[in-house]
Length: 268
Image 1 (tube, rainbow, N blue to C red):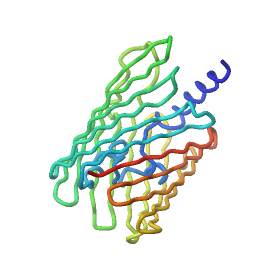
Image 2 (image 1 turned 180 degrees about the vertical axis):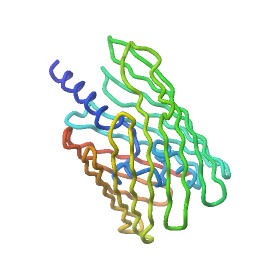
Image 3 (image 1 turned 135 degrees about the vertical axis):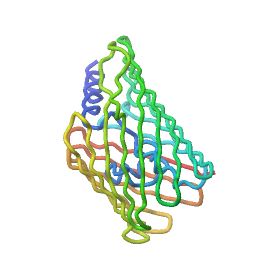
C-alpha cells in the first residue's frame, strides 16, 4: 500500500515538473527538449513542422522509465508518411501505472512550402483514468512552423493547446496544459548541431533550454542538454545503420531522480 501511495505521489509531482509527460523521444530529450527547430521523427510531439524533413515513411517506438520504480513508464509510437510535399503523422503514448494512466493520441498534417518554410497542425485526444475513481477525456489542437533562414540556421515556433481546451468533466480534475515554444537550431559544422529554445507554459515561468548533437562517427552521435526552470541535465547517444536508428537518453531531475529512455525507428 505504501509503495502505491509513493508511486501516485511521484506521478502527480512528475505532472507538475515534466510538462504533462510530453514524449519527445530520446534525441530531442537528450538535447534538453529543444525540439522547436530540430527535425526528427519525434518532432510530431515537439514541433510537427519538423516531420517535413523525413524522406521516407518512418515508424518509431519509444519506452521511458521514470524515477525510483520500474512501474512508472511511458510507451510511445509514432508513424510519419511523406506524400510529396505533404506529410501526415500519427502518435500514441501511454504514461503511468495500472492504478493511474494517461493516454494521448494525435494526428498531424504538415506541408512544406518551397525549400524554406514548413507549417503543421495536429489534433489530440487525451484521457486520464484512475482505477476505482473515474476517468476524464478531452481534445486539444497544436500548431507549428519552421523556417530555414539558410543551410545552417533554422527557427521554429510551436503552440500546444493555444485555445486552452479543458477536460470534458470534473470526475478527475486535472489541467490540460497550454504551452508556447520558440527556438533555433544551428549547424555549426557537418558534425555539430546546436539548439536552443524558450518555453512558456501559461501558468508557469519561462524556461530556457540548450542542447547539442555531436556526430562522433558516421554511425554514432553524442548528445547533451540542460534546462533552467526547473534545472535539469540531459545526455544521450544515438546509433544509425542504413534504415535503422537506435537512440538512448537519460534525464536528471533534482527532485525526482533519473529517467532513462530508449527508442527504435525504421525508415521503409
